[in-house]
Image 1 (cartoon, rainbow, N blue to C red):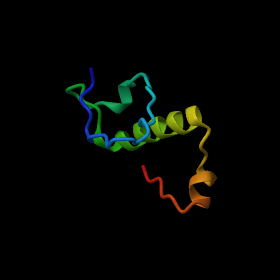
Image 2: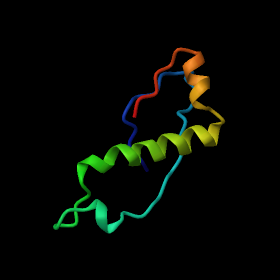
Image 3: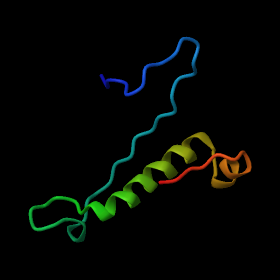
Image 4: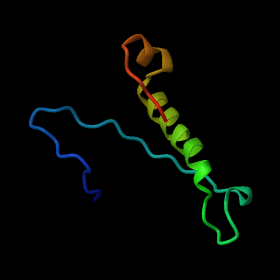
Length: 71
């Protein structure tokens, strides 16, 4: 079971969720095999795209409603 980061308020809708998996390439790690922090943004972007695709939400949907979706 995943421990929720935020407590849910009574009557609140369930959070939107998705799972993303991928491969870490050799060029993305340092000599100790740790992913370089500069690659995190692309991983977060992959997750954002997967989440919005799953629920049919596009960049313009958020933009038109004044919702910022930074990485």
